[in-house]
Length: 140
Length: 269
Image (cartoon, rainbow over all chains, first blue to last red; front, side, top):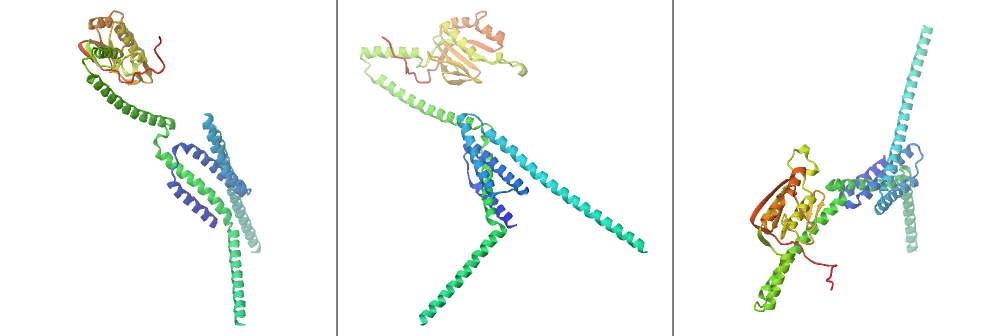
């Protein structure tokens, strides 16, 4: 719980500072690609956490490194007049969707498992009841 | 003795405090480890950056209206505005200095025959160069886009730069002495060309209706225009452009608006 509260606090602080930060329009493309890279690594962290493969070092290096490389691609693209940043957009976008799909599958599997457990419990209870009833009948 | 005792007591107190501090530190470390606060704060810092960038970006995008138009166009529009302002300022400067030149001309001793002849020559040359307002008999030609139905409008029924150019050329051939297109004086270096949806004359935009004024023998000019299979027939017939030619007893043509200067060409002897 405390961890979630801390994270939410940081997010709120980020939103508040973001409202007071002014980014010049000419840099907005860089920021947009960086945001995509960051979002990708956050989703990646979620899916890794669900699969219990989460490592802080990979998350942090991916978070900042991907953003910086994506910005660098935008810069090079603007210098060469080739829209290389599209590569970053496509790759990060597809990875984001992949990560989301793994998260979704994992959750659905967990739900199914729970349902099965509930069904099994019900079945067991019914069987127990039958057994007890038959026992009672036998006794009578 | 008492001093020593006090010292010992102090030491003990210090030790106790140290133990307490140690305990506090250990407690903090335990607390941190229990809830893994450090890792959460690290993740939190990362998310802090992410959310900050997101909100800032959204704000800038919503603030900028030219998002669709694109950055380049906005830059060009800014450039155009500044250039226009510069142009206005330079024009004012030019007219002011021209006035000074005029004053010099008038003040210089009028008795001197040489100066008189030079003045005449200057006037003559400036008339030829197109730096003076002129008036005299001539004709006024008005070109308008064809008035067909909106569905039928094709590019042929619009006034093109080539149409204007042929009219001007025909006028010159018929002996016109001074020509202006929408009050842009045609001089020796004037260009008439197509720039996107408008026509440019002397680097100034010109739009329909295009009024072409010409000074010269009005009868010659008019008949040169209205001759069978001439320019009027051509434009009216095939293209459907609206063209009217009117004879005037007095046509005034403004002087050339820009600066006349030769940068590369020099007199060869």
